[in-house]
Image (cartoon, rainbow, N blue to C red):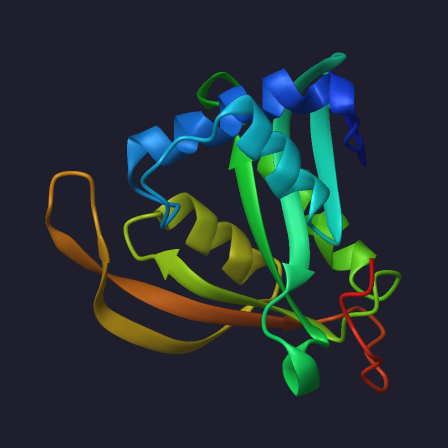
Length: 173
């Protein structure tokens, strides 16, 4: 099994739309409730500071986005989202995507990476973030509504950019 990461291209849109919408439909990780149309997908992924895909044996099975977490004076801290197809989970692709996004922070002008809403029931993601050195800086009780209508906590997590020195103006595309 070979994992390869690369910037996305237009030819990846159908695959990343399928993967992204699969996570949206599951209703247990992403805040959005509406699946993306092909044009919405095209616009959304093109608007990010970085969109990268993960391939397993030449097939796109994952995607991540990296963009400023906020505007202006707080734009030097990034935010990211990751999606891995159900068929590819447990094969190390998610970890590869997160590691790559951390490596891309400085080249993209970011001093760190903040997650605003890691769903408490997403134990696999939380375990990975803990393993990679993210710090949980807060918890919002009942901050996420699962697909079944019940509410669970969300965690705010942070990781400084590797070799973090001085923050630079971030999020420049």
